[in-house]
Structures are given as structure tokens and as C-alpha cells.
Image (cartoon, helix red, strand yellow):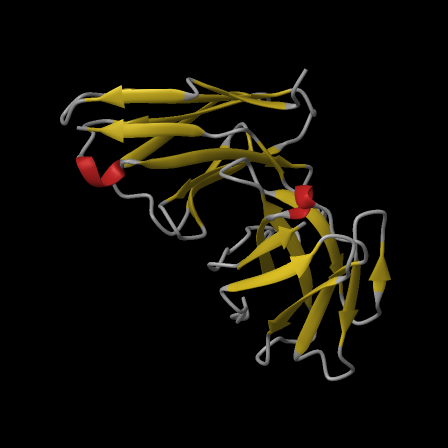
Length: 113
Length: 112
């Protein structure tokens, strides 16, 4: 089984709808991250969490919110989806504290029409 | 975090060594060089990292110049499965700064 899972894997939604992307991990890591990737570009950080009580904005947090329900779960919400939020979304985890490796999930492809 | 510069694309014949360069001329003393790769829209995969010494693992080798302003990732015997976008990332490794800042990377195409 995959260490980092994301649901749904694909989603098409309409402008103005609220949508939640979910991420779960079995690695026991404290740190979790949400990135988005637009075609032909690298990943950009949306939000990150160093533990259940710690949430931090990344470089492109506007229009998004997150919830860290447990050590293993980190959800990303789009309160009112807009077309320019169409992208590939990745969740990642790390053990932090100087760890050099982030483990990424398989991604969620979101299309906002 | 220091900015990195990579060529947008490279080709390599299967079985040959793939040498992917990265320029990071503004790197500071406490910043490490990391390499990740992304195969066809999958989640990025960690490859290797280093500070100033050359590093080797089962996937690749990392050569960092003595002045640390550039580095080269070497895949010693490239296979078709190595076709991917390779990202060179420079960041410090302190407790509160383990965020990754991705550029556009190098798209490596391995051909038969």
C-alpha cells in the first residue's frame, strides 16, 4: 500500500463550488505539505503543517484553506473554486527536524469549469 | 533559499551516463543541494542531496564543485525509465525551513 494517498485522484467541479482534497499518510511523519503544479511549471507550496496544532501559509495560499485533523490526515479546501485553480495537487510528508526527504502522494488532478 | 538554473531539456542514449547540470551561484554556506525527479505527472521522488562532498547512492551520483556554485547529477547508466523532469533545489536544512522550492527543472529524454 502507498505511504501517502490522496483522494480523489481526479475531480471536475464547477466555478463557485466548495471542494475538499484529502491526504493520508502511514509514514508516521509529523510534517505535511500541499503543493500545486500548473502545466510546464514546477511545484508551488500552498500550505504546510509541522504538527497537528501548527499550520503555515506557503507562497500561494490565497483561495485555499487547510485542516490537520490528525497526524496522518491533512485536507485542502477550495471554498469557492475558480477556473485558475485548475491544476495538479500534491500532498507530501516529511519527518522534519533536518530530514532531507519529502515523500509525495500520487496527486489529484482538479479541473474547475 | 538560493535560486537555481537548469537547462530546460536534455537527451541521453539508453545505457549512457546522463549528466544533468545545475547552477546555484548564490548558494550560502548552510545550504544543501537536493535533487528530485518527477516521472510523467507522478509525485516527485527524492534522488540525492549533498553539502560540499560528492555523494553517491543506488540511484545517482552528485558532484558539487569546490566553490559550490554548481553541481552535476549523474545517472551512470540511463534507462528509458529515467525519462523524467529533474529538479535541482537548494535550501538550508534547519528545523523550520524544510520547504522545497521547485523551479522548472530539466526534462531528460532517454532514447533507445
